Amino acid sequence: MKKLLSLYVLLIFLVSGCAKLDETPMSSISPDQFYTTPGQVESAFAAAMNALWGYWYGYGIGMESFVGIFVHDDQIYGGDLVISSYAGADYWRYHYNALLNINTALHAVLSGKVQNTPQDQLDLLTGQAKFLRAFNYFMLVRLYGGVPLYTDGENPLEQPEARASVEEVYAQIVSDLQDAASKLPATWPENLKGRPASGAANALLAKVYITMATAPLNKTENYALAAAAAKKVIDSHVYALTPDVNDVFKYENKYGPEMIWSFISTADDVATDGQIWTGAEAPFYGWEDITADDTFAVKYPEQPRKNAYLVLYNEEGKHYTEWEVASKRAGIRKYLYGPLDELNAYQMTFNIPILRYADVLLLYAEALNMANGGPNTDAVNAVNEIINRANGGTGAEPLATLSMTKEQFDEKVLQERSWELCFEYDRLFDIYRKRILKKVTQETLPWYVVNFSEDDYLLPIPEVDLRLNKLLVQNPGYVSP
Image 1 (cartoon, one colour):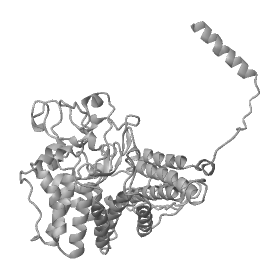
Image 2: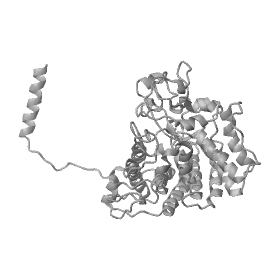
Image 3: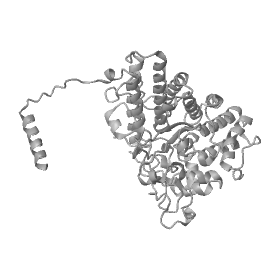
Image 4: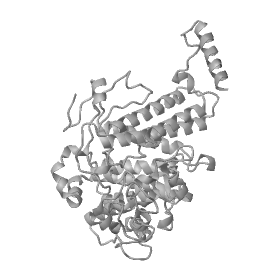
């Protein structure tokens, strides 16, 4: 059989060697020619998300210490505020790759290239595209400040642009989200679960407005707009908190009423190995790539939520401070609710939420308090709904009250955001917009305060892009090529 195969391969080689090679391609398909059906357009949306979230890259491992971006908050072990000139370069590329896919497909829709398609379906495509574009620019503007704005399918390599201002980027984000909210459905059919709905657009808009109300823009008139956007999500009654905090991250609730929009994993497109989220002790036998900062774990209230969100004990009931094999750090329980056979096969299919209903309640409470000069009943109730679930009847964490000052309530909400939304790519952005990076570093890792600079609130523009696009200007504190 081996001799026959060898002879067959040799014959193919000889025949092909005698044939005249024609290097002129028989046909080619440009993006304008390709995006002519709804399915083709939606494939661009899938490609855009795939550019951000995958097996061992992107937001699948964004909290890894060697990635060097989100690790600099006060939740994740390993941050030291030593930010190199290469920090975040991959994320710049991920987001602009995603934007190229989105803009090219959206251009095809808006220019009439998607034919024989009803207007309502075209609106759904437009709404999804604008939502995804807004999300990508929101991540970019918070990480890098003003960035080049591409909105019409332009290739950045062929049509380089200078950096737009922070205000201009946010104006584009708001415009896109408002349009997306008007075009997206309140819910999607079961077979299309996971797509962003109008509630996702309003939830993201609330977060955008509250970020605009804080640093660096500090346009406080946006607090009222944030509250209004969050209220639309609440009043839709599409979303709700999962009653038991132990069930929030169970696989059967991946698309439950609390999860508004997430990075999604399936058996065909698995998440990064679950072993990265915990220590080497049983039952998970993790690799300790992403663990909780010890100060964060120690300060976390002793309530059911702590056990639901953190790995505190091994299978023998021994606390992480007494583990013998692993480093003595708590793991991240949120992403370890799948079956152990998945974990052992390195085939985890958990989702990481991008927007959760708990986040919306906290955005609403913060915005109301700041817009009104103090907490009202709606603001207090929104926070306490989350705290009551977290406490599980223990009373471990004090409730918010109407007697709190504006400043006290704001601090309460910010702390609750840290407890509830830990390890969901949220805390660093709260630290940035509240300008408390030096404060939290002093509280958790005081020996690293010497590394702090006001320049740490932005990442460097990647060197390769500065070389390719001479219109770009580097952020303060970083070296230009």
